[in-house]
Length: 130
Image (cartoon, rainbow, N blue to C red; front, side, top):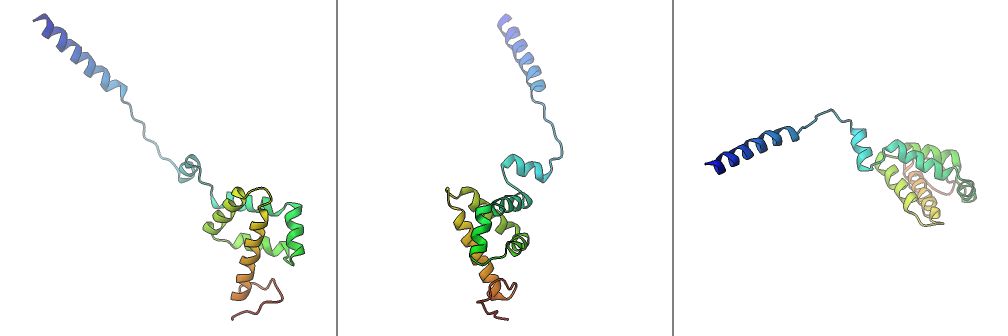
């Protein structure tokens, strides 16, 4: 009889304390907070990383040496879609030392394609399909 009372007292106190331990909080979370907690950069942050890479003196001199106007490069970066900006920023960030040349080649090819399609006129040696 005493064992049953002690057991029922133990179960009752266990149930009582388990209810107070589980407290849930609910609040609105913005998509920016979710992106930051997941480590996802916004498109604006991606463009800022691209601009930072393109403003380096060695990159600017390489672009000029290849016949690309840095002002037009900045305009093209501003015209990139969010997905393209994200890919380019990741390429720049993950490139090995000296790998910025790959980003420069990417920009060169991107500008070349837009010239051929008739969206820009950066290179004098291209003919538009329009």
